[in-house]
Length: 469
Ligand code: NAI
Image 1 (cartoon, protein in one colour):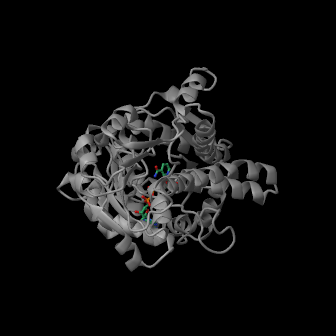
Image 2 (cartoon, rainbow, N blue to C red):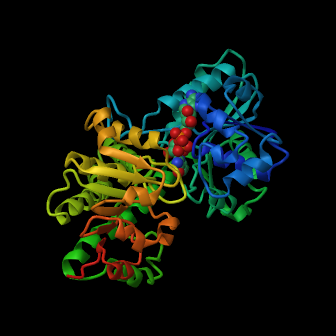
Image 3 (cartoon, rainbow, N blue to C red):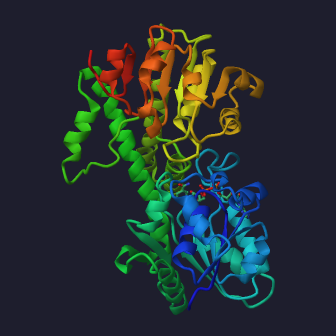
């Protein structure tokens, strides 16, 4: 079967870039991305490409090429479902904040709503693709909803799992040249195999077939959770070592280099930092932990949960280090944050370490001054408000957002680097130093800057994992 019309439900960090690349690489397929969030869809349609709701290097060019040709963004969900022969579900699957599994399980209400809507609207056979990250065995729930809540017409559904492995900040690059594409489906029936081949053929327009893996649905669903758990585990492992390095006089970068050259370990994802953030790692590990607990596998659950415990510790440790270094009081002191996004080259702030570090400092009555090249003021306030630690008014009193890094750092007692934006490396650090209170402290949470040079200027520096005393 040849796919002619694709619909993607969810125009977020995954749905937007993924569909833009599919449309760019498959001009013969019509791709419509739909969302219930009107503001988001309007931003995807904005003539000014700098206003796209997702910032990703290179994304503006891809959207410019395909939008209006075979890539469309719309709020007309029913219409797009009706027209499509393949439907991607790319809606959010956050951690549950209520009821059973609160704080751990994935909240599948958005997925279920999509499934019910597809069942209600569909008049012809559809291939439904899980693009969202889902707990293992979700496909059977979706299948049951699709098969039992329909509109009475004799429509057949095939469910595929096609988890997305892109990393924010390099989404376009990752989509254009993925390490692998994973397609899980019902390998036991002809219809299942045909549906898998239909999706494989879409990717085969630009990805070589030996990079496209096909598996059963459950392996595919579980592989996505496992991939994120392994990646996050590497970060927590090196961060655990960073604290030990600080105590023993070792340097975590040297240790990372030494172990990374072992081909069995490899050099990637061994950079110590203020802790991982982003919408996925924590949520997906918690989900894995919850699934393990559901099956009574308590040791398995405890093993993976430790990755989160270590990450929380690393964020708190960074904040407490700022407080203790500044003579045990930050009350009334301006602390400048360079960076708020959870990593460079994205405007996504979900679970960013900066939010938690700011929260600790605000509780100590510090004045937090934030500069980030891509994150809006509104988003920064929304992020701290979401924690519910104090009132919205108090958060606005405690945090000031700047559009200029030099202004943010003026009269500050300390600068903290929370995101590894490249532009921070190009700043005139002597000028920044001259404008600060003395002693001028610098806490590099990302191992971004040349500490020796900064110390020569006069900064008192803290670098994670460097035990030089
Ligand atoms: P997001 O929150 O940026 O986007 C989800 C969108 O779905 C929102 O715009 C929301 O309005 C829309 N939506 C929700 N319910 C809807 C409905 N019933 N009808 C129409 N639209 C609806 O989320 P993001 O980051 O794109 O993540 C989506 C999924 O992809 C999640 O399951 C996530 O775990 C997974 N994922 C995310 C990655 C990332 O880097 N952000 C990477 C790989 C997977």
